Image (cartoon, rainbow, N blue to C red):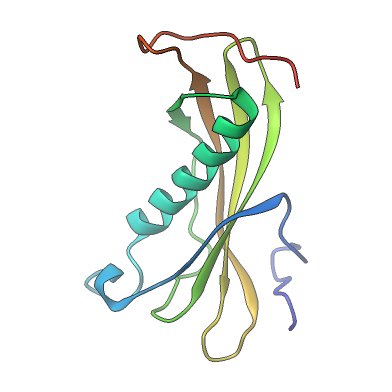
Length: 133
């Protein structure tokens, strides 16, 4: 199954963290999958990667600029990949890529990416140190 390389992205980077089918209930007024739905799945995937690395609770504190390259269509499988880019004392940046496995053609195309920043928190919601790996 060929991967799309119009943006120089031959294949996803990182680990497959979330995989989900796009359904009709997730569409916007134009019939495409709502961008907020894609963003939410990316935040979930980034959160999973952050929780695993932080060994506990995290919160999203920032998302760098996102540009939607292509729409996601009903029936596509959204695959979200994550990679921990950097780790500070209490926070980490995670690169998150969303790719669509097209329902009709089975082509794999990148639809967007962003850097998410997460902070590890304790039971009181205060920042806590991220343990060494």
